[in-house]
Length: 375
Ligand SMILES: *[C@@H]1O[C@H](CO)[C@@H](O)[C@H](O)[C@H]1NC(C)=O
Ligand SMILES: *[C@@H]1O[C@H](CO)[C@@H](O)[C@H](O)[C@H]1NC(C)=O
Image (cartoon, rainbow, N blue to C red; front, side, top):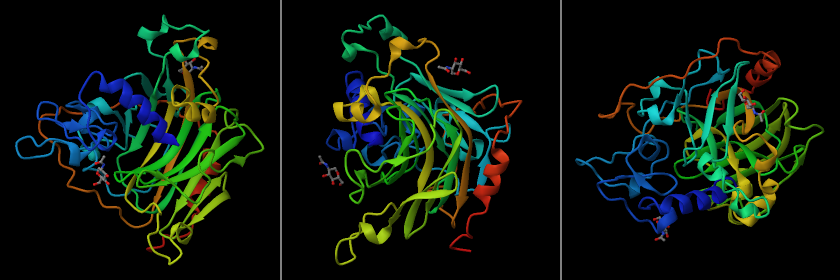
């Protein structure tokens, strides 16, 4: 559910301004003046087009080279607990030049420039989405469809994981219409998801996608729902995914809540398995599901109640930490060389005081994982 509704919304918004491309647009290819085909299907030259999951097969060659760099370069899977303190390097996508040695995570505005994420005064990253200022005056509460749409914000690892355990400790914003997603995402569009909607803060949705198609084993549409005895917007919670070549487990505060076996995804002869199996980045995202198609909107809990909040503050998800534990090496797809023509990255200001609420417990829990299957 995550990216599908979002893509529809973002593609429609972008298409009018610039040429479109990619799998979303009948596999069309960009021209040389705006050579990079973004993951959202728009052509351009900015780091938001050429970085991230730039679609290299639909981008134009410049000087004999495909100018995409975000999906080609990256670190080998690197185990660590990232507390978003001064040791974690987070960089804005518009300053990222593809050199993964300069960043652990990249923040981008999910297609349009109306989301932002920054370090919080008490530690952790605040990912916030706000409505677009230029549209705010157009709001007409009697016609929710005219409400401004804010797509969202995303934080992606620069290292690639192929099997391992990834986890995050965070609090959701808990407002209707907002989707909080903690996922793995590959260039081939394999995806393993934790998703939380503002519709019900005591319910969380595990899901997976194989090559861009929602997992057939879990129910379509509404998917699997897991009821929790607490609200994810009122307390920090540890959400983990344990991903091996044979199974995926979705874990809440150390307790396995859902499992998928690779064999569940195969045909009756045990062939053609549709199990996520490509190197993936770990991503945390907040996006506006209320601006999506009607099905996405109802799943998300309706329109974001922009009129009930102070426009300037938006909604926050607070991430205390992300943990990455690798099984083996998901090698990067190319050497982490710095493409010509991009300046030096500027790091975001690190946090001075990092809140440690729950981190000790989390640390212990996350790090007592079974041994790597490759060890
Ligand atoms: C785009 O390319 C993919 C992969 O080659 C193919 O499966 C798909 O049918 C193509 N789509 C269109 C609309 O041509
Ligand atoms: C979100 O976080 C920012 C920065 O700390 C704060 O100013 C704002 O009030 C928060 N918004 C909400 C709705 O809590």
